[in-house]
Length: 260
Image (cartoon, rainbow, N blue to C red; front, top):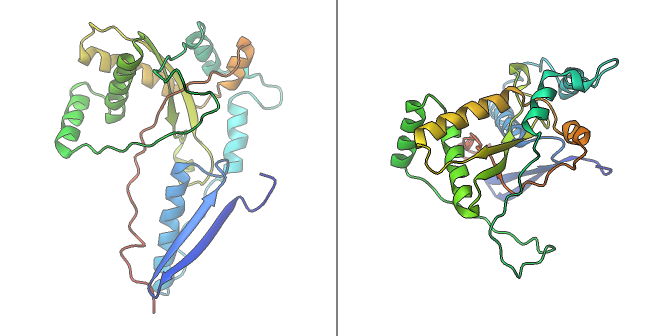
């Protein structure tokens, strides 16, 4: 953060009619949603320039600094306010009264704590599976997110043999329409705990997860750091997170020819 610029862009010419735009930014500048805004607007301006047309994007109604001031005021960080008076503070204190369980994931006994080597795994579901998941969501009056998250929790139950499961949910944090087009760091990590009963019917479990998730989302704007601080416990290290990114691949650049 001490060294500018926090957003770097490079144009790499890979051929006579082929170039790549490469950019990187510090995470505090923008989140995954912000990257999609950046790509979309960059493609938009490129099309306008190629067609010799001027700028037609409307100025932003608010900027990130406006959101920061508003958010600090909402959570009681403004003059003469106390964050303990915020209704979400009471919700999270009650939710986290008994602390956060430790998730005992299976790991190699020979693994060293300092060993941070990891791996990535990608798997695609075909449309028939997707349709069945959507049907399950519709039957239980919930979203695809909730269904996928419920299955994720059941997988953790199987791998850990624990009945009390904890996971964090990566939330976009854009709860107001006017900040949808704003580049910034709005992401919030929510702590989710649940007791799993192996004899509970799947439909009932999905509906229960739906109710709990909606409760959390209703209080998603409140930061958890002051809650844990007041409880006298460090912010928990939760080894797993669930993130459903509704991102469509933007082909705006790949589908157009570069100008002569």
